[in-house]
Image 1 (cartoon, rainbow, N blue to C red):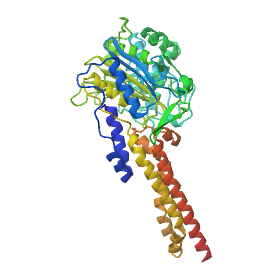
Image 2 (cartoon, rainbow, N blue to C red):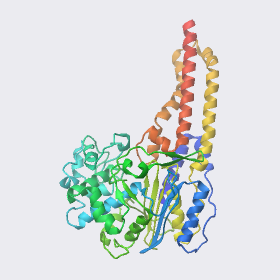
Image 3 (tube, rainbow, N blue to C red):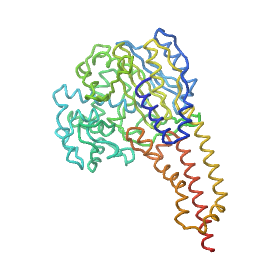
Image 4 (cartoon, rainbow, N blue to C red):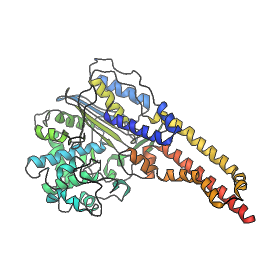
Length: 499
C-alpha cells in the first residue's frame, strides 16, 4: 500500500470517528484484500499490464484510463483503456490532464534556470519576481526552494484558492495574492497549496523572458520527445474541458469539470506515450532514451530530496515504506480526473496512471498504480476497489433513515408542541438544538472534508464531485432537521398564541 493510500484510509477513519455509528459501519465494511492478477515472480510485460488493467476496469466499472510503465530506458507498456467521457476509445495517444503531476514538470523548469545560473534556490522569490507581493511582510523572505517544497507559509487556510474567483493568466494568479496573508512562518511548515506553483511558473516566464507554455514546449516537452504534451491556463483549455466521471452508489456519472486556473500547478495535458518518455528520463538521471541530457542527475536528486523531517520535495514525495523499496511519487486530482506517478529507483521502474474519475470517491489511479508497483516487485496485486464501492450503500441506507426520521418528526410535531406549550420557551428552543446541529453540519461539510485533506478548502458544490453520497446524506439530515424545526416551531407558537 502506498503512503497516499494510507493517508486516504486514515482520512476515512477520521471521518468515521466523527460520524459515530455510520463511520463504524464504513470501516467494518471496507473490502478485504483478495487475490487477483499475476503470480509471484511473474514477468512484467505489456501483456501482464494489459491483463491487470483490463481486469480492474471490469471489476470496478472504471470508464477509462491511460497507463505508462517503463524500466530503465525501455518502455514496457504505454496504452489507453476503456473510453473517455464522450465515449471515444482511450489509446496511447489520448490526451488527458495529469492534474498535480504537473508540479514535477514546473519544478524541472525552475531547476533548468538554476543550472543556467539565472536562479538561486535560496534567494527570495521577490528578487526575480518583484510583482510577487502579499499582505504580509514575511512574504518578502519566501525563497524559491520554499515555493517548490511548499514550505512558503502559504496555505488554503489563509488563501482558499479554489473557493475564489479564478484568474486567466499566471500574472493574474500572482496579482490575486496581493491581499493574502501567510498562515505560517516561511520555511517552517509544509502545506500543500497550488498557488506556490503558480508563482513558480510565473517566475520561469519572467526570468526566461518566454511565456511559460512556450518555455515548457521548447525546453522540456520537445527535447523529451513529448510532442503531444502542453500546459494550459485553465481546465476550459483541456480536451473536452476536462469532462470526466464521478462515482456514486455503484454508478459512474459523467460530469463537467468547473473552470479552474491550472497553469504551473495542475495544467499539463499529455498522453500515455509521452508519459513513458517522461518516466524514462526520470529514472535515467535526467537523460532521455536517445541520450539527450534534459537536466543534470544532481538536479534530479535535489528535486527528490525533501527538507529534514518531511517527505515532500519539489513536485515529488519520497517515501520508504516498511520492508519495501524507496518510492518517489506524486498524485494529482481534478474534480473529474485523478492521476499518480511512481518511480522505483532500486529497480528502475516508472509507472504513471491517469483515470477519468473524481477525487476521493474515485482514487482509481492510486489503486491501479499500486497494483502495477506490486507487479513490478514480483508480488501478486490485491483486488482493491475504491472505498466508496462499499461505503456508498451504507450511506444510502443512512440517507433513507434520516429522511424517515424526519418524516416521523414532522408527523409528531404537534404532540411535541402540546407537551411544551406551557413551559418556558427557552427550554423548547434547547430541545431543537440537535436538529439545528444537523443543518450546521451540512453547511460545514466542506470544512470537514478539508480538515481530513490537510486543510484544503472547497465548496459544497465541489463536495458533490468528491463524494456525492456523503453530500446527499448530510443534505438529507439537514433537510429533515429543518422540516422538524419548522413544524415544531409552527405548532408551538400557534399553541402559545392561542393560550
